[in-house]
Amino acid sequence: MHNGKKLWSIFGPLIVACLLVVLLFSLPISKKHSAAIEHKAAVSLSPVVFKNQSIKQQALSDKHTHYVPFFGSSELRRMDRFHPSVMAARYHNYTPFLFGSRGTQSLPQFFNINSMETQMRNNKAVYIISPQWFTKQGVQPPAFKYYNGELANLNWLQHANPKSPYDRYVASRLIAMLGKDGTVSAYAHKIAEGESLSSFDMGIIHFRLNMLVHEDAIFSGFQLNNNYGKHILPNVKRLPKHYNYNVLYNDAINEAARKTDNNRFGIRNGFYTQRVKNNLAKTKGSQRHFDYTKSPEYGDLEVVLNQFKNTNSNVLFVIPPVNAKWEKYTGMDMDMYYKSVEKIKFQLRQQGFTHILDLSHDGNKPGFMEDTIHIGWAGWVKVDKAANDFISNKQPQPHYQINSKFLSPEWTNLDPTANNLRNFQNQLK
Image (tube, rainbow, N blue to C red):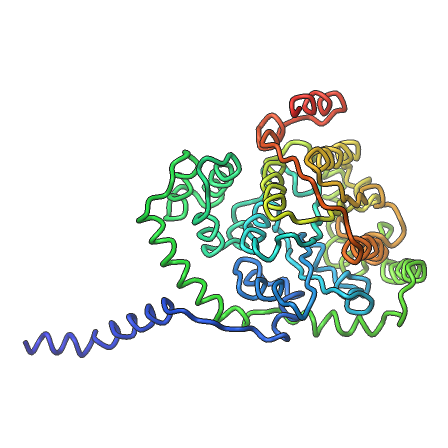
């Protein structure tokens, strides 16, 4: 008895504390983030915002603001004064909510979009889709894991339909990213095999989701980058008071000329000095074997399109260019690059996604690119104009015709010659 009391005195408080924590994260809780947190989160590009849900769901549901999701990858971090978030703060009646960093390709974006299903319904969005995503391997597992967490995975699993080819595809890709071990992979394996999750599985998912949602609501507002204070506000003050596209475009070209005057590639001076200059010898000809025409990324893009169809989202797709001078130096096959762009546009248009801003041929224009692959300055001015025209004006109701053949290896590995695209188009009828 004495030993029992002694053990309780040692472990009892720990047990009670654990029970209280479980109780705390199991009870209903409502935490409203402040407007300042929403504003900060919209440009923070934080993986916490990307992989969780409370802040972005609240912001996109906020009736007092007009947040519009902008999906993309590392180009969104290039926050000069012509960046869409800066331009919107100065001139427009909406605020971009940015979702993107290096590695946020279509598959992590799918889970991100899926976690905002209610907020996306019947609303507009901008989706920047880079041909450089479409490598032989597609998104890499470490990048996927960094931007995609258990909350997003379980949120998708609780509604996954084993009869849907799209959900079976997502399940197989989830296993490929996470490996075969672990609870999430075990559940995904059932979906991939066409098997429904049991009531016990669903009970575990709901219990775990409840705890993760609580954790997200309590802690996510403390882990935001202050891009709003560092990059957005200071640059807003540097823009002209009134919007004039031609003035802004020429101003952007002039600023780019001043900031890229130490190299022949039109790359921002600091980036060139720190990242390029000392590697010139080994990068010459280094991209001559790149191929973006065959990739699992085409299948990952397809599940994003299906998700947009499910929420009836009206989407502007932006295809950015690459730096033409740099690609010539590194030997990239630009015919291959343009073929990959045509394949992406074919996949979009065949299924009713007709709002496309194709900038793929603008990579040789003055001031259009900030570095080797990322848009900036004059490029941002053009993107902002197209985005504002799309968002601020009424658009026709979309009519999507989703076709699961775009998930097939036949499509993802198709060489997009004109003849091959015609033959594939005939199969869709």
